[in-house]
Amino acid sequence: MFILKQQDVEISTIQHPKRDEHLLILHYQGQTFRLISVFKANQEEEARALWRELTDNRGKACVLLEEPAQYSVWGKIRLDQLSGDTGNYNKTGIFILASILLLQAVYIDIEEFLGTRQAGLFEKEIVFVLHHGEFPTVSSPDAVKYLLTMNPLQTNQMPSWQEHHVITFLQELHRLGKAYFGNTNFVKQAMERLEDMPSSERSLFISWLNECSVSKLWH
Image 1: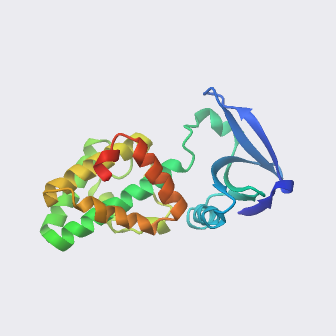
Image 2 (image 1 turned 135 degrees about the vertical axis):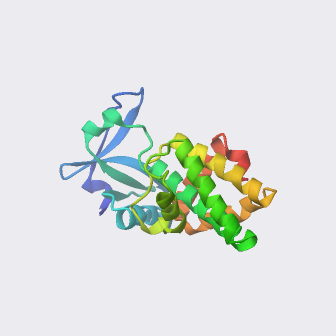
C-alpha cells in the first residue's frame, strides 16, 4: 500500500485494552497501523518481500517504513478492533500457510510413493481429523480437496484457524505421515516445501515452531 519514510509518519504507543502491554501504533493521514514485523538495515529484501506478500497476494493494507537503522512492516487497524485482539495479527495466517504447504507435501509424497489409493485414504483421514477436531470451515470432503489442490501462496481463501488449531493439525499430520510411511523420513522432504514461502514468513514460522509443543516432530 505505502512505502514511507520516518518523517512521513507519527508513531506513538497505546495501552492494550486487555493485556498489560503497550502497542506501537503508526499514524499516517488519519489512518492507524499496528507493527507486524521489524527487519535490520541489511534485510531490506526480506522486509519488501513480506510487505509485497501481504499487500499484493493477500490484499492487506500495509505500510513499509524505511528508517536509517531498520525496516518495519505495519498493518492497518481500527483502534476499536484491539478490544478483541489476540496479539497474533497476521502471524497465525502465516502459520496456516506453512501448515497447508506441509499437508500438500505429505499428500504428494504418499501419492507418488504409495499410490493413488493410499493418497485417497489419507485424504479421508484428513477429513476425519478436521471434522473430529471441529476445525472451522474445512471439515467437509470438498473443503479438504480444496486444501490439497489449491496454491496457498496465491489465494486469500485460507482457513480461519486459531493457533491451537495449527498445533493440533501439525500433530495429526505428523501422526498420519508416520503411519503411512512407517518412519519419520518424510519430515525433511515436507519441510523443504516451505522454501516456497517468502523468507521472512518462513523464518517466522520456523521460530514459532521451535518454541511450540510439536517442535520435536518436525525436525
